[in-house]
Length: 127
Image 1 (cartoon, rainbow, N blue to C red):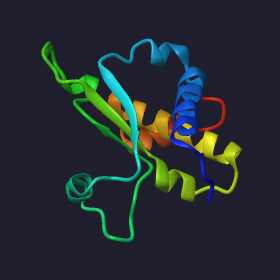
Image 2: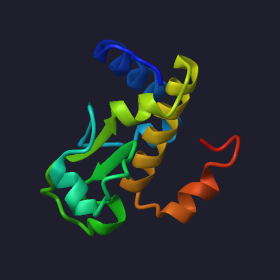
Image 3: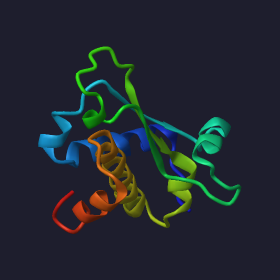
């Protein structure tokens, strides 16, 4: 487990955003990217997570392909969960990479990609 301050964690998120493909980041609009200690009880219930399950990140919103001309859409939200991410690694370098990977995964959901397509794109050299 790695222990970092909230300021460090936010900096790792900012750093990760700067390394993601520019063509995707330029198309990311009206999305709040934030973090929380862990998923809320409401998020856990919505996702039907068991007590022994957690997640690193969550996209909440309407994926771009499903908007079909909708012009008034509340901001989408991507939340990274600090405690599960920190508990999953043993070094700060690994934490930074896991944050980047999780952020990319949640951004892919914004673009309407399902898990199979995300995993296909996650092959080395893609994201």
